[in-house]
Length: 136
Image 1 (cartoon, rainbow, N blue to C red):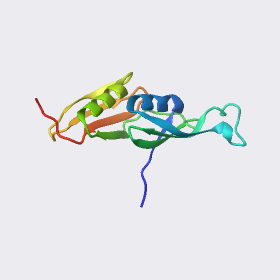
Image 2 (image 1 turned 45 degrees about the vertical axis):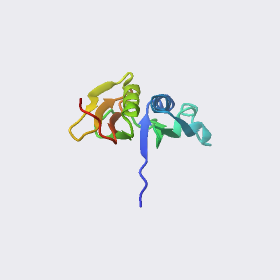
Image 3 (image 1 turned 120 degrees about the vertical axis):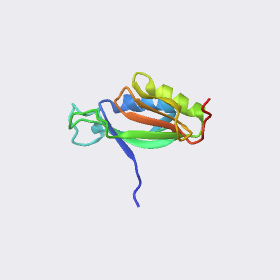
Image 4 (image 1 turned 90 degrees about the horizontal axis):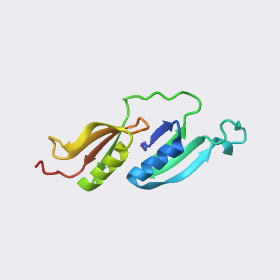
């Protein structure tokens, strides 16, 4: 049986992780830099080799992309489902800071709230609620 873990390659993994912690709550659980390797070059010594962050109650991994350029794409979305409307709205607003809202967080036909954001780092997020909301 596999265990799914999201892994994000970043231009600045520390800054991106801190943004997610501020937006969703949480903490960096572990951090390893290239400088901790015995054969690290001076150029890479401060770059993040592996970072584990817990944000919004979810663990995911990150690293600085040092061996290949990053290309923003549309093939990965991170979906977060919240128990309450207030939690969903707070996360949505926080993640939208400096980013782009592609679909506002609003009631949808299946009865919950749903919205989509591309954050300021180019990561696409889908935010929804587990409970039905009134469509007043």
